[in-house]
Image 1 (cartoon, rainbow, N blue to C red):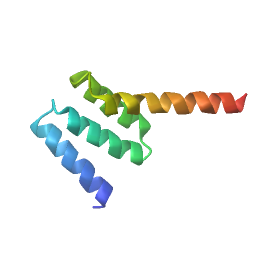
Image 2 (image 1 turned 180 degrees about the horizontal axis):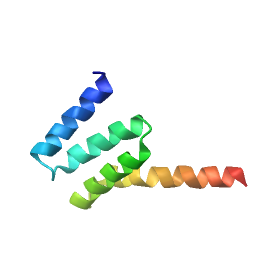
Image 3 (image 1 turned 45 degrees about the vertical axis):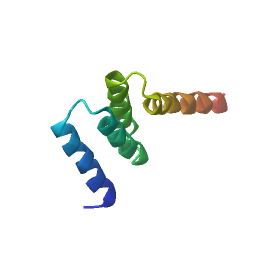
Length: 77
């Protein structure tokens, strides 16, 4: 098992023990994002923000894909 898979497994175990851990959702989202799995990352960041609406790092991560999409669209014009 590689380091990424091992880290993801640890966060999933943490969520099995405490599904309300916004930090575990956020950490798993970081792993998914690094692996290029943006849909899964967005789902995790959204859950972290739902559990803790004041958690600025999750909000920032959710805003990043939108910013990249806007830049891509402007460049394609």
